Image 1 (cartoon, one colour):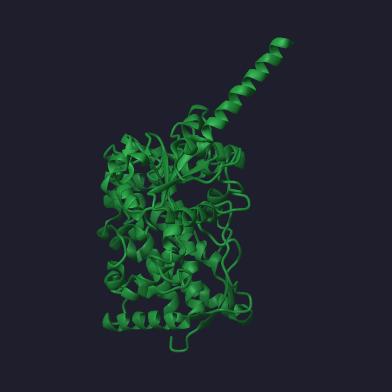
Image 2 (image 1 turned 45 degrees about the vertical axis):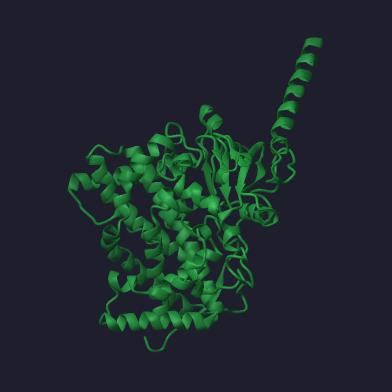
Length: 497
């Protein structure tokens, strides 16, 4: 009995020493930091009552005036570098990228195959896959996919017309409608499926897509452990993606590949490009499923939220909406009434509106990187970063810094005119990241957003109504920025259409 008590006391003592040592790391380093609490460090309330960006942004605002390149924070028991300096962010993402290539996110191809995708994997696996996948998202490939996305955009406008006529006072819930549009676009481009989500909100593809974004195999505590200690989670063979979702996407990919190969079907879509890679021996079926999965996850919720935020801001500022609609009409006249890929590329003010939407609402409000070798930040040896240490770049904080963007909570597309952009540092706008590991699907995301806005604004006037929220709140449990409540707008069909 005494031996058991002694063992318990020794275990407790070792545990106490370990926790105390971990949570005093930045004190020993004499680096400005936020005092942590056990067990969440500086992330108390994370995924429950506080969004990730509402943890990082106040810390960035508190420490940026110190003049230090970074501050110290704790993600649970893990000491993490919070980047404060735009020049350091630029070095991490671009100039010294070779030392910060990895994101340090959980991936486990053996036990959780859908996590083995381009966004999560690191090291020697990431670089060759990125090189193989990059041509898939070239401007030429986007041009091939343009008609497919445009067909869904036209259907979106038609559904919008029907719903506005049948609703009370033309008031529509736009966030759900936008997610149905993007699920149909991704279903068509990534899987070659006619998902019919615009007509049927309960379509299986959209339902499973929503589950993929909201459901996890484990509870929040274990999920937090997986994100904090991915190496140990792999050793324990833990999973994040729910088995039902894994089976669904693997089945969809397997059946699509079988049908296309047996019937020699060729389409100008993402799946066709993956099949070509498989036939060259560059991808296996499980790897194809993982890449298709991230294409869906990255393109579905992100673009749907961006569209929702853009329509919300345009409804609040009709003068901006009018200016954008004028540009659309002038472009159509120039191209004899035809909306072509070249026509879309000429919509300069559209680009400014999308850029400002992503400035005010960066869908991924932070970037993460892992340091590979010892690194002195900006050449200062006091501010060294250890191998294996995580860095967080507070994108939302940068985007709402009044020193970079005066009156940051106002929606001003003109911020992104060439003369104003030239006055800001390189790393001041990071909705797609930057450097060799920026978002590979950036062109596609911009394209499906532009196409939807084109078809909607050409036919409809959007305005606020009594049900429109005065301020958008975000889902606390989602690492991305997505509206926590429905976004209602008044939709009126224009008479000259």
